Image 1 (cartoon, one colour):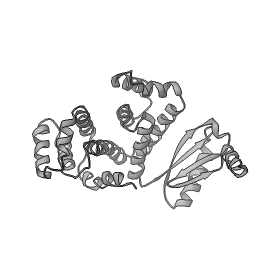
Image 2 (cartoon, one colour):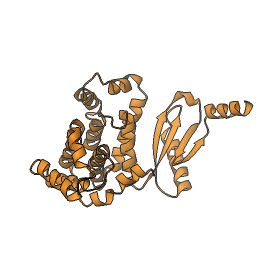
Image 3 (cartoon, helix red, strand yellow):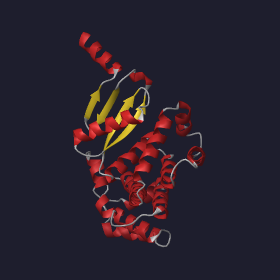
Image 4 (cartoon, one colour):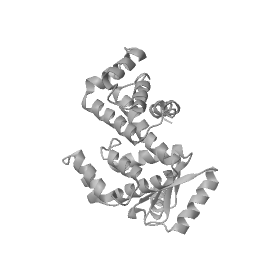
Length: 263
């Protein structure tokens, strides 16, 4: 794990002591948006020359009475940490808002559904250049992009999925699909699963999908969540990435191997 990611995840156990409901999660997201819009404020809240108590006092002056008790408690704890930059501070707050929603889904027995819905929506975006372009177009306002996502998901996804997909419209991981992929990684951590990223030329049927899942779970000795990407360029077979391991069995991959051997 990269040091940046390790620093963010190291706060998870502290954050998990505080329950984050939908309201608190949305308040945490609002704090992130505020810090995005006001660079001097995020620099002050992450200032390494200030003591943790000073940063906490500033956070209380800014947000006491404006945030719920749980959201305020998390923000106060987060600003006390020695984050390397204001941007990392924002990532830490965003992460706990997302994890809070996913934790609630897990407690309600809905985490698997949320994972499947987020994965399907990411696949829909990746499979539609027009939709991907519309969500990437910074000529459209964020509200417009969120309205588009709402039209696509209303009546088709759980409330948690809809909230997370709307949040992903800001595309903090470069694109909406990549941001959804990040949410799926957080969900897999909570479910104690590993993610297998699978590229195929066309969707697998349910039986083949289940056989693949069982084979991968037998290999790693634990639960595996399958994240599919449809790419006609692979020609046939599939490419599986599981952690640092890549298993290439596509026709395109074999042709590329042959080409390299001939050169």
